[in-house]
Image 1 (cartoon, rainbow, N blue to C red):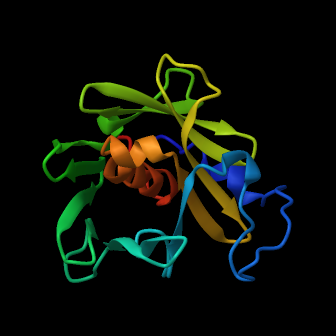
Image 2: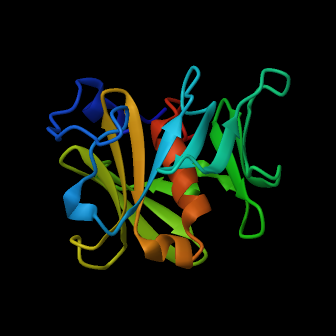
Length: 193
């Protein structure tokens, strides 16, 4: 069983020092990513595997549920009830599927651990995206591109999990795989067989 290289980095807390939010309960925006769209994993009960991914204005992007009546399955649905992502947990890791784009495959192939075990490569529609720890965040980059061009960022601060995505993530249809990668990285369950 492989460990998740990103969980342990956040287990000791964050050194992120932000000014207070104008909304009070929300973390202050990261000014270096002002063009990013911000989403929050809210209502995490007891974890991200039962949560809601919302935009900063409260609009629901995905409802993420792992129901006891169908144990072993996590489902992402839109507010209209459309199923978008399925995770099938098993004793050898997990299988993942994204409706219309990713047929059922091992999560360890969709989000492959690097040889040196320091980052993961997300394989989506023939493209590769690297998820790498950077300071107090996990950033997603297009593989073989400048590491300064972060497409998505996962931040955890004071128990709040925030996902920031560049507009290109939305326009190129990467929101579902990006959210799936975030849940796999933060779900606390092994994904490698």
